[in-house]
Length: 228
Image (cartoon, rainbow, N blue to C red; front, side):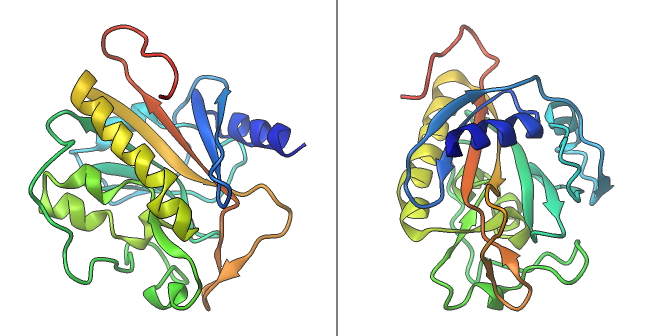
């Protein structure tokens, strides 16, 4: 029953294919679903450097709240109800898969581009959850501003510590390997809420995801096969 529900949620998001990672177990499934379409959402913080990503963005058939923000390296659909992203979309190229930029001091920060109440640093304190990146900082070592923007809390979800440092991190590293190998990837990722009732953290009541999805698309050369 749980896997069938995962299938329904993914199809409602409208993505092409995905692996789904339950927040605690680290298992994964591969799922196919209808072709992506463009989002219908409020667009703010327009950025010419990532505006082209709009053509790759999904339409959310669940009609969730969405404020679309364009950053230097990614596009995010922010959900004011969950106070987490619905999804984050970015392009990862061979040139951007590595770099010398280091993580800044006091990196995580509140995103003032979205209305209050919104996620704040205090919401995560003493919760037992990591502040899990959706667009990874490791994909943005090529530019200091791009790196800094990955630490905006609109690009962050509460995430199990073992998942964040384990399978999620290994998938991020694998994506960088693929980008170096094939030249260019398009990646979309975000949280999934599968239960009727959800755990929340902090005084702003950030909703904790039950699972996460990540789609990795390579349009270069020939088909690449399954995750390995």
